[in-house]
Image 1 (cartoon, rainbow, N blue to C red):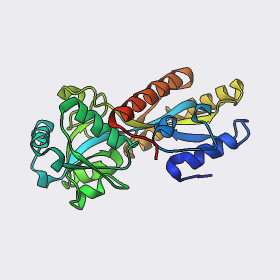
Image 2 (image 1 turned 135 degrees about the horizontal axis):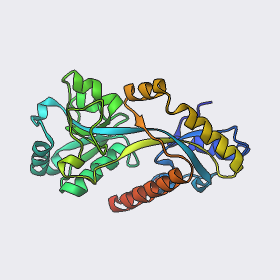
Image 3 (image 1 turned 90 degrees about the vertical axis):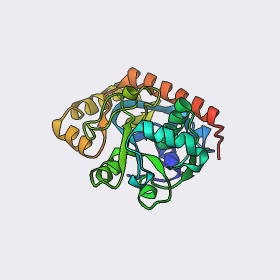
Image 4 (image 1 turned 60 degrees about the horizontal axis):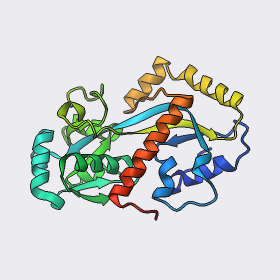
Length: 254
């Protein structure tokens, strides 16, 4: 059953109120452990969430419209330094990965673009409402292929197989701009360990299937093969990274 709404707070509450018997699962996006830092929530504690098995991650690409007149990241950064806050970018909320990606880029390079909130970060570029944005690959790749947007750099550690011609930030000397949305099968922390192990094994059995991997890649996702304690440590580091970034940005719960 889908429980959309309130930045997944409704789904999180439903999961944590259900009996911890392993029959209620959640596909948790990466921002949920840090949700209380940006949104007032009640009725549950995110510390009760236990990610068990990674499923996929969604990298981003920095994109600009052709009208901006830049063809690569150095050209974009030169323009951004000249225009300062007159250069606008689209984001989908302070806790969203596109906004955090731009914050990392701004910290690493000293640029100061002005953020404008939209539901989607790619469409405002196509309509001329903003000058740049970090877009998820599933939204941005078709527009890049059609020549409607110019891709400048991807946020993966290496080049994406969907955009092999576009460099990653690390190879351009900006390794700090590495970020992606990620998703994991998650349960209530009180689910018994034997059931946790069975759920992890079920995901591990499906994840390597070539058909599954092909569908993920075609949809703009990358594999995310972390499970159990390794995933939980990764999620903790990601939460702490996001909380520190929110603090530097002055983000407070709304």
